Image (cartoon, rainbow, N blue to C red; front, side, top):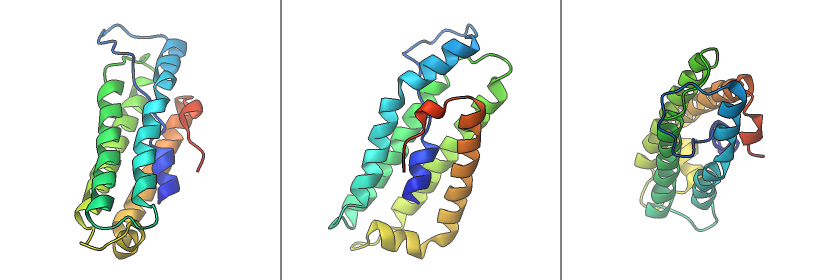
Length: 154
């Protein structure tokens, strides 16, 4: 699960460019890749949720922070206007990240008062399987978009 989360977040944001002018492929990829440091914040939240001793509200908080971080990435990505040939994959990636963030929130809502990240995953295998499928699709999209520089190591 943690590996999938790190991979799915392999996206970046624009540098505040709200222009609707289409970017060239190279510029789109550069701008998307520039902000991959923000992805690290979401990944760090999930790592913190898995830390020894983390349980209950702490796990919930960090999972929700990771979901919020992915939504922030999507919001920023949507301000980029990719070349027409990349736009369908970019749109599908945005959708996949939103679904992943929703799944993280679903899991966060299921953390018991003393629940850990591991016990929550174990008790919610269908959600985890769905998230892993989303992560696989997102990884494929990232690869097609040539944003591989945004992939984080597991």
